[in-house]
Image (cartoon, rainbow, N blue to C red; front, side, top):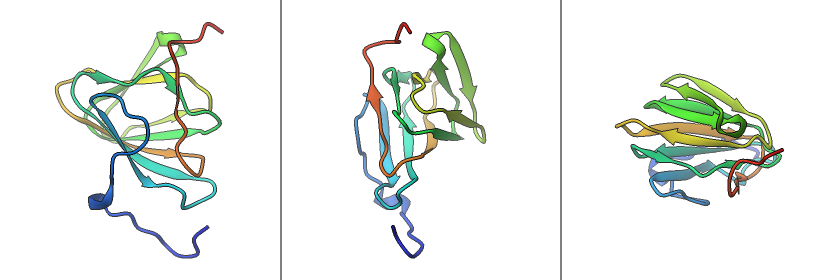
Length: 127
C-alpha cells in the first residue's frame, strides 16, 4: 500500500476492463490500495450495460453529468440518477446501467476492492 498521496490526472485515464458498446470504463485508481478502487463510466446516449454484479465488492456511484438509470430486482426496479446523486449497489446485487437520454452520462464509481470486479450475466437470475 502506498505511503504517500497519489494523484491520477484526468488526462491519463485510459479505457479499461470489459466494455459495453457505447459505454467506456476508465480506471482512475486501481491496484493502489488493498481496500478501495475508483473508476469513471461514460455512457453515450441510448446505451445500456449488460446485466451484471460486482462480486464481493460494494459499489458507490456518484452521478457527475447527465441522467442515467440503474435497473435492479430482476429488471423490475428503476432508479434515476441525476447530477449530484449517489447510489449504493451492495455486493452481488444484479443490476444494469441505462442511458435512455440524448446526452452523455458520466458516473464516478468507487468499489470496495483493490481492482474493479465485474461479473457479466446472461440475464436476470430467477432466484
